[in-house]
Structures are given as C-alpha cells and as structure tokens.
Length: 501
Ligand code: BES
Ligand code: MN
Ligand code: ZN
Image 1 (cartoon, rainbow, N blue to C red):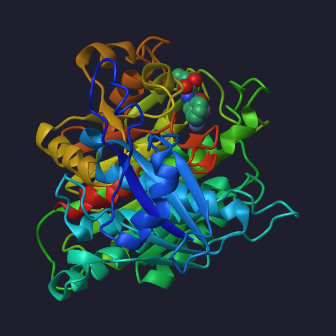
Image 2 (cartoon, rainbow, N blue to C red):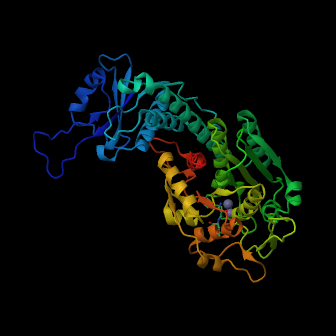
C-alpha cells in the first residue's frame, strides 16, 4: 500500500463562492502519477484532509501499488513534524486490521514548513513503529498483524545523494527510538503476575546485555545495606521481593562532565497497601511501573545512539500490597542517608497508597550517591495530575530553570506534551510532620505539587526534573495513530534531554 500525506489548503474564511465550493486538498508529493491517480476522488470534495483523516483508493490507475492511502495533516498553516509522525502511525494502523503487510510511505516533499528531509523521515519511521504496537499479546485469537515491510520513499530532493546518507541515518535513529518506546510499552502492558519486581529486573538485565549497558539488579539485602528504609517499607507487605535495578551507560573517553541520573518508579502493582484502593479500576494499577519502564526504554535508545555523556538509571521496583507484614499508617520510616555518617530523613506514613514518592526518595538519594550531577525522575505518581492536566498532557516540575529549559527544548524534538507546574515552600509546609521530618501526604488540593515537593526534599538543590505521567501513561481509547493501552510516554523526551548534554 502506498501512503501519501495531504494538506487542507483552504484558507478562505466566510462563505465560499459556488466556483470554489469544492476546495481540493493538496497532496504532498511531486509525483505526477500519484496525483493523477488521486485526482478524480479528490475533485469530488468528499475528502477534506483533516488531521489523520484517511482516504483509500483501490487499484489506483497508473501505479504499481494495489492501494493508495491518503492521510490528512489538516490545515497547511498548522502542519508540524509531529503531525507527520502521527500520520505515519495512522497509515500503519489503517493497514494492520486489513491484513496489509507491506507499506510504502512517501514523506511530504513540498510542505511549506521547510522541514529537513532527515527530520521528516525520522518522524515517519518513529510514528510507523509506534503505530505498529498493539497490546494483544495474551489473546489466543491474536493474529500477528504487524507490518512486515515499510519503505520510506525518497523522491525529488530527498533522493539527492548528499541528503540521502543523512536521511538514512535519521531513519535508523527513528527505528531505534520507536522500538525503544515499544520496548517500554511491552513492559507496561504486562500484568502484575507476569511482571513481578524480580522479572522486571531480569527483563532490564537482558536488555542491558543486548545493547551493551552495565547493569546490576539488587534485592532485599542490598536495600538493607544501603539503609533504603523508604523503598523497603513499600515492599515489606508483599511476598515478592523488591528489585533495585541499576543500569550504567559509560561512553569511552568521557571521564568528566555531567553524570545524568535517571530514576523511575517501578511499582509492578499498586493495591494501595493497607490504605487499600477501591476495586473499581484497580486492575489498571499494573501500569504503576510506567516511569521505570520509560527509563529502561530511554536507556536502550541511549545505548544504541551513543551520546557523549555518562548516564545512570535506577528503577525502584516493588509491589505495594496489604498483608500482615505491610506497613501501616502512622509508621515512621527512615530514608536512605546521603552519607553513611549522616542520618536519613524520617518519614511519617499517613497513607500507604502514597508509595511512589517513598521508593523514589531512596532512588534519588542513591543516584546522588552514585555521582549524578543532574536528576530526572518519571513516575505515575498522582491521580491529582490527571485532575489538573487531563489524559493527554503530563506534568513536569523542576527546581532549576536552566535544566528545565533543556527539557522544554527536548519536547520540541519528541513532540510529547508536558506542562510545567509549580513547586514551592507553601507545598513543603503541608508535608511537615509532628513526629518526624516529613509526612507522605499533605491533603487533596495541589496533590501533584505536594508529591513533587516531597521528592524535592530528596533531590535538594541538585538540578532535577520530575515527570508525573500518571494521567497519560495509559491510553484509554484507541486513536488513529496509536493503540489503546500503554503509551510509552516520556521515553522520547528523556532521550532527547540526555542527548542535549
Ligand atoms: N499509582 C498511584 C497514582 C495513580 C493514580 C496512577 C491513577 C495512575 C492512575 C499512586 O501511588 C497513588 O496512589 N497516589 C495517591 C496519592 C494520595 C494517597 C496522596 C493518589 O493520587 O490518590
Ligand atoms: Mn499508590
Ligand atoms: Zn502508585
């Protein structure tokens, strides 16, 4: 199937005259045969080239392909590289259920945005791979409907020799990024019984081995040795031991400069613990390790794309269960100390369901202890973030404007949607404890900022970014370009942020 993108060039406002009553979208190709094959149906005005709107032409005249698919990018003035990424995903998701296994996508050639061919080709590869993922591995009626062959056709200027090498490299990059995002999604999709903390550790180690990262996976003993009282307290109610996953990327010849510390929440199932969650939707809490999975996906891409900066990733994996050994509201836990001669901060547990911040507290401290100069964490941390931002935009918090600026620039490349929310002394005030240094909840209002401020206590003044992805890590309804299920959010942005150092 040949896929061509189209734009809506109708800019006229107000009533249209009868002469141009049927505005015709413009195909983003200079190929005369494709234009001729589509002219008839485009001339009817039925197809408007709205965002991700598809039009299939069977047996297109004069073309070798059996089908010609046109995917809309919307209004010309609003076309972006992210739109192209989604359009590629839409083409793949159009093809999959129809049993179409071979696809040729023609990236836009005459888009007025002046985007470099390489950038567009990378987006096509990324979007196509993301579109190819379905969360149906446990269905016995699963038809293996993955696309088997995808060709990105370079015509016109894109085919020129000088451009070609750059474009091919960019496509390779897009493949790595798309596959790494799908790697994270495949982990997030696993149910709690199939992906315990131990199994997550094994999957991380196997990936590290494959792409050449250094790795260690520790369990209970090491948590005790490091005095990770906060992390351990979450795991103590479960029959499943915790896993402290450490991945190291150490490029040859890079012995100074920043060390980036990536810390992920890896709760393989969150029942809430003794402060147990209601039964409705509890099954979704298998995705409470999406932040950890995002870090593993990003590390996979980092290992393959080889930026010139050192990176350590830490995933704190545990299962949050109620039991006779579980921690209780009112318990006081001692977090990992930054230095062995210093005391760890004491935490009063108000609600055992606010467990993500507990495992991350020790994860952040451990990253600092291992020498991280800059920190980024990702977590499905609060329900409050989706109340604030909804199901399509994730939250970002930072204690350092320069570090945040780099993350914002990374968003321009990744196309992921994040919105910065405040930290502040007012929030820190709400988590002061009478019995200890800090308590793990501070009331309903501003819940995402309170949780972020809790983490801030452990990042202190190390430049740090916190990503709260609870609202967007799971796609509730299929969209044209992406399946319902795990979204793989944050993999691309974390990767680009790392590459900016
Ligand atoms: N894992 C949840 C947050 C969550 C909620 C993720 C919905 C995805 C979808 C987290 O551990 C949690 O339970 N947070 C509590 C915090 C509260 C007890 C302060 C919450 O948001 O209700
Ligand atoms: Mn919880
Ligand atoms: Zn949780």
